[in-house]
Image (cartoon, rainbow, N blue to C red; front, side):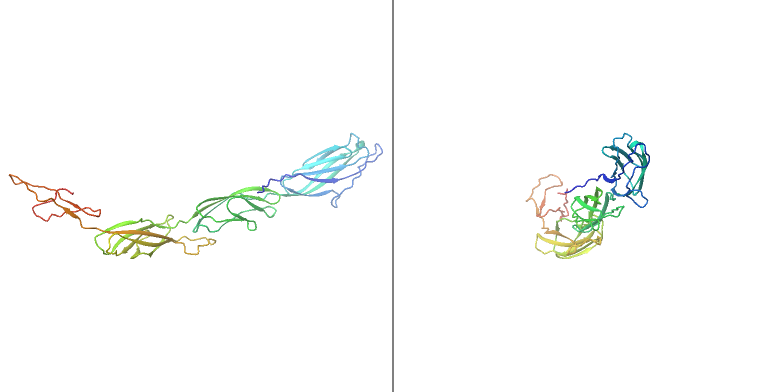
Length: 369
């Protein structure tokens, strides 16, 4: 993947101004200059820079007596620095790093052979390209459907109004450069992170986009499979609790199984049915349950209504009559009238407690077992 770095290229403008000093020793006067510029006679250059780049301009003057030690160049006014070197000609090196658009006018002094001097001006019309603005951005959404397309519209500003190119460095999504947006398909709740590189052909930087997504959780029936013990095959009813994690209103109905279902309140329904007389049969009840989540306009609902289909299995066991175990014939020998005790017990194929009822008027139960 291509990574961009900040450009700090030094732009060099070469304007050659040549003249020949008067060869007669001691004769004054400005050296002859061939100007190139606007109608004021001031040489002018138009410079397009990226913010942080510098103007580098080379000014050249020729003399008859180039070995004269008086030859020099000095900046008189204007920003920046001006240095010089003498070889076969006089080279002036001007540099300055502007921070904004504007006109820059410099004045400098050229000293020629025999100490002849002349004043010169140079104008730079500067256009500085400032970097686009795109900061870390944070998004959040509560979605009804997992896997729906999500759009993140980015706030981008370029001072010069140039197109800003976006490149996705990391993150499972796609960048739309025409609309300045990211789109992707969140399938679970969580924070999704995207790192982008952006540039306007002059400046490059990176930014991180965060999207915190919560996907609606469907409500559920909270009653687990159960066993119900009955004495006969008359109609029975039992409660069916349900809940929604986000606290949304729940819409529930019976979609299969015997009997009928009635919603009692916002968290409980009642299931009624008449079991068969056959023992230990299982009955399965089916429920269609959903909430009232309101999707965003760009969320695409599934082809079928998004309902949670839950089921409940109920086993009906008929309570069998207990079998009483009594002792055989008992003989008690006593000399006085007294109370006599003996044990009895009962058993059943179903897990039940027993209640003993004594039919004889001269006896009673002592204890619970």
